[in-house]
Length: 129
Image 1 (tube, rainbow, N blue to C red):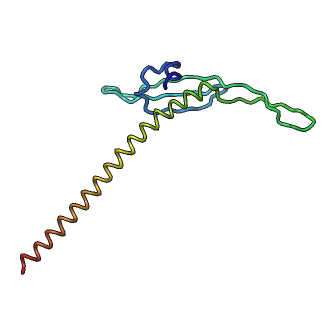
Image 2 (cartoon, helix red, strand yellow):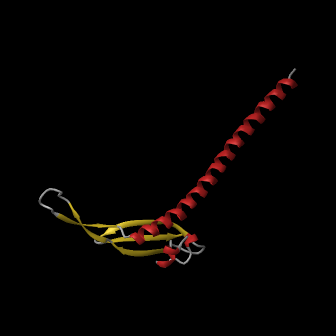
Image 3 (spheres, helix red, strand yellow):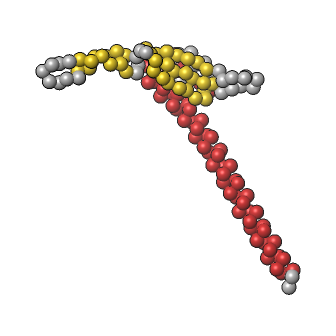
């Protein structure tokens, strides 16, 4: 599942927290950020340059047959990004589940507290009779 990541030097894909991708000149720059470990002041990261594929595209289908130079993302980078998306979206899903559980717990806490107050009021009414 992480063959492409291992190929670019990612030893422990499970420690990946996030990544960024930018284009600079004729390269795509991928920066992978790892989760901080105890004692680390800064996030560790890995920076990898991928040369962009150079192509010539026909831009005028009329009689001129003019071509224009263009570049596009390298196929191996697409595979790496696919693996990164799977890893980072899994992390996001786990965080979302945790947040949902905490939200549900807080809601339940409010409901129970309100019910306790209601029962105490009913008891007070019975005591005053």
